[in-house]
Length: 385
Image (cartoon, rainbow, N blue to C red):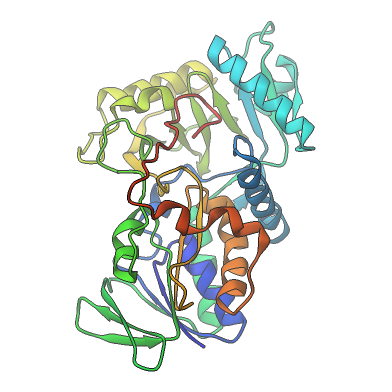
C-alpha cells in the first residue's frame, strides 16, 4: 500500500510510523515545519481527567495507557502526576463532581492534605486550611518537540519520507482507484489512501478530500479554539508536577522553565493579535506564578503566544474515513498529545482494513450535516482545558 499522510505534527508522524511498520510506503507532506503547527502551541497535558462523555473518556484512557507503556523513562513524556487545587466556589463544585465520577470509573484520583500537596510541590504556597486538593498520579505532560523528533526518527527508520514546506493543493481521484495528491509546487503523489492529520487546518484540508469537517473557529476572540500560553525563563522554583488551580495552571517546561496558563484569562485571547512579552495578560500570568510559588517572584516571561486548539466543532475527536471508497481518512482531535501514540496504531489498522469499535463514536459523518450547528464547550475552569 502507498499512503500519503498530510501533516507532520505528533499525530501525523505517529500515523505515518505505524503505517510504515505495517508495510506501507508512506510519504508525509507538511505545509510548514515539522511539529510547527498545533503541536508547537500545546499545554501538552496527558490525561483522561475531564473527558466527557464516556466514550471520549475511554478513548483518552487508552491513549494515556499507551503513553505510559512506551514513554515512561523517555525524555519526551514526564508522568509527573497532576495536582489540582480549587479555592473558587465554582471550581470546588466542578472538581468535587469530577473526582466523584473518576473514582466511580476506577480512575486514579485522591483527595490530599495541604501538607501532602507541599510534599508533591515543595515550592507551592498552599495554606494549611486548603481543603479542595486532588491528586491524579497517572497524569503528566509531554515535551512536544522532543516527542515529534522521536516519532520522526521512528518513521524514517521504516522508510517514511517526510517533506516539510510542501502544502497540498488538491486531492483527485486516480483512474483505477486511489488518489492523486497534488502540491502547491506542482508535484503529484499517487497513493492508495490519503490521511489528513492537519490539526486546526482540518476543515480546509478535509474539503480538498471531498467533505469539509467543521472545526472550532480560530478567529473568535476568547472562543473555545484559543488560549494564552506563557513560558518563563529558567527560574529556581521547586515544582516538579503539573498544577491546575483556580488562578493558574503551571507545569515544568524543561531546563528550569515553566509553562503557564489560566483559562480565566483566555476570554481576551485573539489569534490575530501579536502580544508582546510585557503585555498585560503576560505580566498577569507572571504575577500569578509569583504568588503561587516560592521563588516565583524572580520569574520573567521568555515566550508568550496565543495557542490555537485543534478542536472539531462539537469538541470531540474525529477519526474515520470520508466517503465509501476507503481512500480518504481524517483525524482531528483536541486530545492529540494524549492520543497520538495510540491513534497511530488505530488509524493504521483501519486504513489497512479493520474497523475498531472504540472509534465508532468519533466518525466524521456526524459533523457533515450542513443543517446542524455545534457548540464546543469553552474552557473557563481548570480541568476543562
